[in-house]
Image 1 (cartoon, helix red, strand yellow):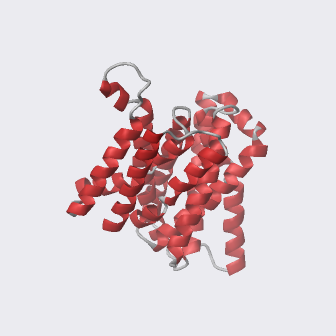
Image 2 (tube, one colour):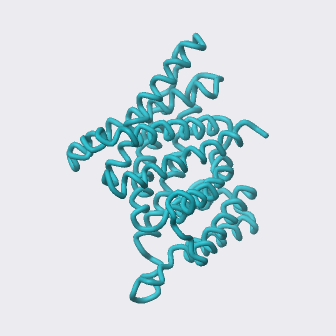
Image 3 (cartoon, helix red, strand yellow):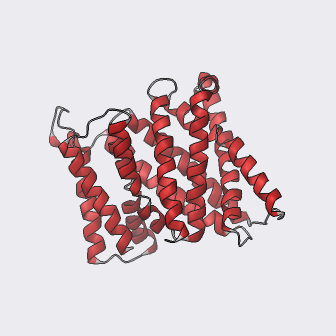
Length: 300
């Protein structure tokens, strides 16, 4: 099995653990913004220590990088912050497995954006996979207990947050892959660590300024929640490092396709840890989207 496949599976597992912790904090201790900030704030010490340690251990000098590195890194970092914010907000709307499944439409959205922006052609089988994913999203977003016309049951806040998070995560992945390719080094782990360090520090500083302006008390709450939040930072760092390293080795779309195992991990977490029930309708939606993203991964 190729290294990037193992890294993508490991990233999905770490990411599931991190989202579990974020859901716990966002539904009680912290606001959506606070839970999002905690993920980056508590990752910084781990990322900087690991990057410095790796440079010392290898004896290598800090590799050079172009100005384009910062364009890709900062764009990807901002997209990831907004995407994470959307996912945490989504947890207050629907259950854990459904929230993660909405997020995983990122693969389908990447294929659509590639067609519109880059003119990438999609085969009939690929188009069928995208349509299958769309059907799954509609089934999953339908809320029978919401009164009103049918379109209010389909077009709702949960569906919007999920789809938006998927689009933003797709943008962040492309940005991160672009950033790693701008670093003058043949060491995939070195490129991933340098990119991760730059991105995580910028995200933490940016969110600290935002929270100080809009939700000042949340920074204090994040520090108070350190016993739980520090684990969120550690799992977040491990997941991001696996994603970033995989991006240096393979096209982001293929990495995301393998990362769809996160849907299975999140479903297990939803049932085993949060005691949530997945309805038959939600199960059908999850199955359709899972089949869709797997098919898109094959036909990309």
